[in-house]
Amino acid sequence: MEKIINKEGEEMAFNVDYTVFKDVWEKEYTLTRQLYRNVVKYADKVAIIDPYRDKALTYKEWDEASNRFAHALIDAGMGPQDVVMADMFNTYEWFIVYMGAAKARAVLPLLNFMLPEGQLCKLMDGSKPTVFVYDAALTNVCLKTIELAKNKPKLCVMCGEGELPD
Image (cartoon, rainbow, N blue to C red; front, side, top):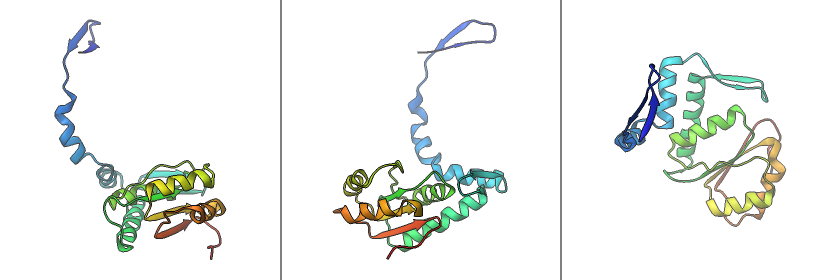
């Protein structure tokens, strides 16, 4: 039983069945559709401001970049429900990876970029990622994680500025 106060100050009670819209919500209101909706309505408006990288993306730029990442994942052999693991800072690249993984119908477990290699290794072994994306500033921790892991990703992607490891 839900209760609200009307504009006359009277309490009103009513029954609400939130399950009525469950099927429609799960099919129609996905993360990728929400981005598409915003691209159509606000294409040239700023969607992401990244003070760390001193960059901003519009909805259109975010959509296009996440499409390129999704296609790169699919071209690399990723299928629906494969895991993309990302050890990244909260930068614009993270948003591209997050939305690109969703568009490729991949699973993206959320990680804390402050985790040490031991904990990342346990997460990697448990989730068995096909792709591992990491920030260049976290290269040492991520390479150690991959070295320790029993389930190594098939593809590793470094983002940000830095030297590519051997």
